[in-house]
Structure formats: structure tokens, C-alpha cells
Image (tube, rainbow, N blue to C red):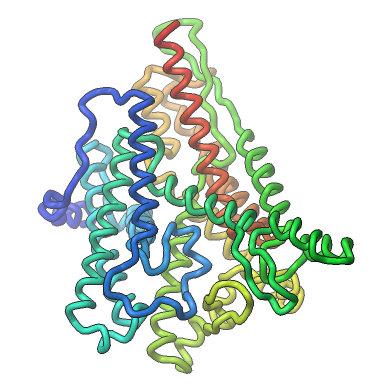
Length: 473
């Protein structure tokens, strides 16, 4: 039944714009160039404001998720990568639950990816309409039907551009994927800005610089009591401080350390005796996929809760889902959940909140660990990285595991891969929680994504350089 459903979508998938596969091997320099062009287009779109909006100065309901979802309020990148990741999340879960039957052939995989892209466009259209109709850019009655349709059109076109940029890199023209590139750029930009921002904010204690490093020198220069100035630089509230910056660096180091954890399974070639190699199974077997899917789940829950809260404020059922209030501090205007399900699935704002409401912390930790482990375990079954898929790949390359026959390879790989996926997802969730509790800049989830993505790009660069070196020697 599931397979027939994908077949029904085939005519619609065929009309979607698509990036053709490269007909030749793309050289490393060309890949770097295409990756730079893709990033440039994304950054430009992040700065182009939406035409026709009346105001976007009210409290931002998605402030906490914008860094992770690579979105920028009031611009063409308002939706960021949310539609792509959401469509991926839903399609992968449907395939994992066997509701959709995804075949093993390249054509079946291509159809599944095309259906995922089609679903991404549908979600882009749906989110665009919801954003406009809920008054994010001003009351629809004041904007007028024409302007509302124009805003929706801009968001849909921008969503299509993001889809094509991601596909461009994934087809082999560039390095990595568009999703990873955009997330890492957004998070690194946030960290650098909060460390060195020259913007000034009146906190009630006088004018202070937003950037933690610049604030250190400013406070030491302006405070007569240097010890007090140093304490302020390290522990000031509601603005980035040096403890946040140090926590960020610490989490970076911990994640890079854990990236080296792996088990090497010995393999040998069937034909050429004496040709031995190893197949590495990393602790982070599914990399950052669990945290991306978990972020997409929370993001969409926030969207639904915000929409219902704006329309049916005070309703009992809506309050169970989430109660929202603007945060009144010296930072940017934003909304934060103060009750309901959304509150318990969001990280505690600071250490004081952690002590005041320990139940919140317990539920949040359990949700993060459980959801990351679940998504990691589910992902291997639908992404071609399960024990069965790996055994098939090794068989095609005429490799067998040392001391095992080809028929027993799946059983042996099943001892390692599902465990590595689940435990790796659990570790990713735990590191994200640790980063949140330490107060790392850009949220724990954001830091985890940035480090894993940067490490992936480092591995890609090393691999490309090795291949380039092998051509000359």
C-alpha cells in the first residue's frame, strides 16, 4: 500500500525542478567554489527583507529555534531549513514504521527523495500561509489580500531556492549538504557575534557592550572596582558573559574528543589474499541526524502551540500544549513557554530555574535522551546504513569480515550497529543537555550541530586532499 502511494506521487515529483547529476567528476576546487556560491546566496537571502510586511518588531515566538533552523526573522529566510527537515522527519518516520514501503533500487530511492522534496514544498506553502494569517507581519485585514499573497509567494520561492541549494551540494557539486552548511554558518555567526558584538545595550546599570569579550575590556576600563568589573564580565545576567563563552569552548572540545570513539571491524578481500582493511563503526554512527530531527519536532510543536495560543488564548486544551509570555529583559524581544508541554520540552533558562523547578529539568533530560536515541535507531533503517545495508555494500565490494562467512556478516554487524546508533544518539542528547545547563552560547543543540558539522567538513577536506595527493604520487 505504501509503495503504491509513492507511485501515485510520481507524476507530481516529475514536474518539480531538479538539479541534474554531474556528468563528470567534480574537482575539489570546483566543489569549494560551488559551496562558497551556495553559502553566499543563503547569506544574501538572510539579509533581504520581505516586501510588504508592516512590522516584525513584536516578541519573536521562534527566537529560540532560529539559530538551529537557520532562519532570520522578517527576511526571505524566515522559514530557513524548517520545511526540508520537517518533510525529512515525517517521511523517515513513515518509512521506519513501514507505512511507506521504500524499495532498495536506485529508482525507488530517487522516488522517495522526490516525494520528500514535494512534501517539503507543501510544508513551505502551509507554513507561509499560517505565518501570514496569524498576523506575524501585521493584521491580514490591514495588509490586504494582494500583499498577503505576495508575502506567501516570496516565502515559497525562497523555500524552493533552499531546497535546490541543498540538492546542488548533495548531488556532488559541492561539499556536504546545504542543511549542514546553513546550520553551521548560522550558529558560528551567532557565537562570533555574541563574543565580539560592538552593539551597546542599556541594562539599568549603565551602557554595556553585547559582546562578552568586548564587555570584559569595557567593564575593566570603566569600573573603579576592577574585581567587581571582572565578576560582572564573567557572570552578568541576560547578556553573553565569559562563562558562557568558556562553556561553549568546553563543549566544542568534549564533542571533538567523543568523535574519535569507534570500533574497527577487520575485513578482508575475497579474491586477493592478504589484502586486509577495517570497517569503522563510530560512536556517533548517525552523526547529527538525531538532534536535527529532534529540533524539527520541537520547532513544529512550538509553531502549532503559538498559532493556537494566539487564536484561542486561555483555552484549557491549548494551555496544556503551551502557555507563552514575552521575556522582558535587555535582550531581543522574544516569547518563551512558561507552562504546558512546550515548557517541559524546552531547556531551563538558567541555573536558578533549574533549582526552582527540578521536575522541568528531569522531563527535559528524559525527552532529549529518549527522542535522540529513538531517531538515531530509526534513521539507520531508512537511510541505507543498517547492518543489512552495510553487509550488502561489503559483499558488492567483495569483502568479508575476518573469521566470518558472508552469510553471517549481518548477524555480526547487528551486534554493533544498532547499539552504536542508539547509544550514540543517547550521547548526543546528553551532550546537548550538558551544553544547555552550562549556558553555552547558541543553545546546547546548536553547539552540538555546529561541532559535528564542522568535524564532518574537516573529514571531507582530509579525504579530498588524500585523493588529490594519490593522483600525483
